[in-house]
Amino acid sequence: MPTHRVILLLSGSLRSGSSNETVLRTVQAVASAGVRTVLYGGLAALPHFNPDDDAEPLPEPVVALRAAIDEADAVLVCTPEYAGTLPGAFKNLLDWTVGGTEICDKPTAWVNAAPGRGQGAEATLRTVLRYTGADIVEPACVRMTVDRNAVDADGIITDPGAREQLGRVLGLLTGRAAEIERD
Image (cartoon, rainbow, N blue to C red; front, side, top):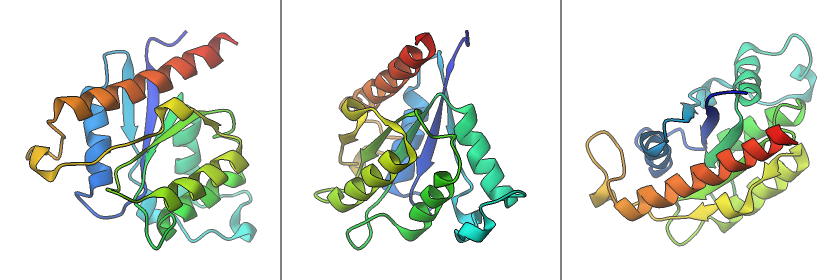
């Protein structure tokens, strides 16, 4: 039995310092001693999805993505919404997960940090994750606004309420991962 849970953090934004990155860095900061968070950094390196390339040998960035998902006990996504849906680069990442089985039955949730919007991205994310067989942990899928005045120089949210909410998200994901392990 593992002594810790590994949560893979996937940002749908390529922009450095985005609200999505801020949320995920804060998740890393609030993680309890029994949780190890891994912030995936290979989004920009993924090749454009082509079903012809979804065969052995897979492109190395795809191998790394699938290995990161496979090694995680759960996945947490924070993605912006562009033009009413997921950003193209993040949809590309998700397309690369369809041909593998790594995310199937993996506890997965998201944080929507888009103030006043993001429903299109959420709907698309839900559709794709269901298609891949991910175990969507509904109570861990939350909306929050990132107050840029409550972000420190390291890009971490300092607001206690936001930090507590992200801690609860982690607790729900790790709890679901523990349930799966017991089954």
